[in-house]
Image (tube, rainbow, N blue to C red; front, side):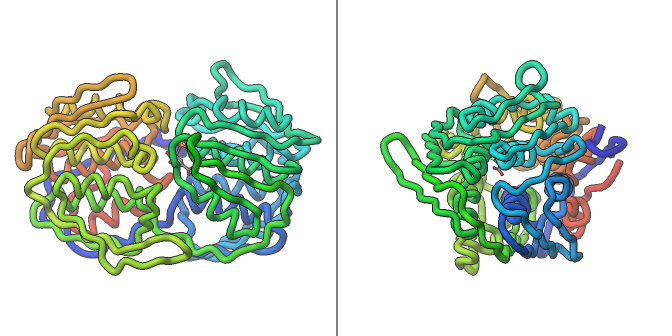
Length: 448
Ligand code: S3P
C-alpha cells in the first residue's frame, strides 16, 4: 500500500539513450528544516524551491497545528510566520507525519522543551521505526514520552515545562538525532552540547547560524563538538532551497548504466556531508563531471553531467563515507550490478532502520533479478555482472520506501527484462515528478 492511498504498481524497461536536462526537486532535509526553523523565528521567513513532496507537506501541516502561519504561494514559494522559540501552541489533533522519519524526529526535538503535549503517529513504515534514539536524549531536557513497545509510534511527548540544557554524545551516526537535540536546545537556558563521532549532514547547524543562533562546531578527538546557546531570538530568513543530491542520484545513476546516455543535472548541492555517492561513482569509473562549480547560499554547488560509463568497476566503499551517502546505497547497489567485479559496502547498519530495511529490500529484489548479493548485519556485497548481462525481470516490493521503488525502476531501464515494483506511491514523498522527469529524458517508465 502506498502511504496515502491505493498501491500504484509501476514498471520500467530497457530504454533508449537518456538525454537532456533533469531539474530535480528541492532538498528534502533543507525543506523540513526551513519550515521548522521558520516557525521558530519571530516574523516572516520566505522560502523558494521548497520540495512539495508528501513528507514536507506533512511537516508544513504540523507547523500550522503548532500555531505557525504557513502559506503556499504556488510554484515552490512558501512563507512561514513564526511564533518564536518556545512559542508553539499545543496541537488539538494527533500529528501525523506520514512516512517521514525526519519530520517526526525533528518535530519531537522542536517541541520537547515547550510546555505542551503532542501525540505523533505515521504510516505503517514510520510506525515501525525506532524513536527511542530521539526520546532518550530529549529526556535529558526534562521531556517525557510514552509510546508503543520498542519505542515506536504512536507516541505522546510531554514537553519540559522547565527545560534544562543537555550534553549528549550521539551513539549512532544520525543527523536526525543530532538535529532533534539541537532543536530542543533552542528553548533550554544555557548551552546544549551535541557530540558526534562521525560527521553527518550539517544543514541544521548551518541554518541555525543563518537564523542568528549562537552555534559553534569544534573538531576534537571525540569528534565534532557542537555547542548551541539556548533561548535566542531567531531572525526570519529568505531560504532558497538547493536541489536534492539524493534525488539527483536517480537520473545520474540511470545515465551511467543506460547505453549512449548524456544527462545534465543542474544546481546540485555538493556539501561534503551529502556528496559521498558522487565520489564513489567516480572511483568506480563513472563518467561523471562537475560543471560550473560555484558557491550558493554558503554551499558548494555544481551542475552534474553523467554519461554512459561502459567500464564501471566494483570497489569497496569506505565505511567512514557511509553517513555522507546513506540514502544512496539502494541506487548504488543497482549501479554495482552493471559494474565488473564486487562492490563491498561495509559499515551500513543504519540502512536496516530506514523507511524499510534497505539492505534486505534491495537484496531480495536484486537476487530475484538474477544478481548475487550477500549481506550481514552491517554490510552487504553485490557481485557485478557487467553491462548487457543483468537479467532483471523481477517484481519487487517497495516496502513503503520511495528510494527502493526508484532504485528498482532505474535498474529496469538497463536490465535485459523489465523491472516492476508493487507500489510506486511512496515516490511522491521525496520526488513527486520522478516519472515524468525520467520519461522526458527518454526512460521507459510508467504505471503498470
Ligand atoms: C536526514 C537524515 C538521515 C537521512 C534522512 C534525512 C535528515 O537520517 O537518511 O533521509 O534530514 O536529517 P538519519 O538521521 O536517520 O541518518
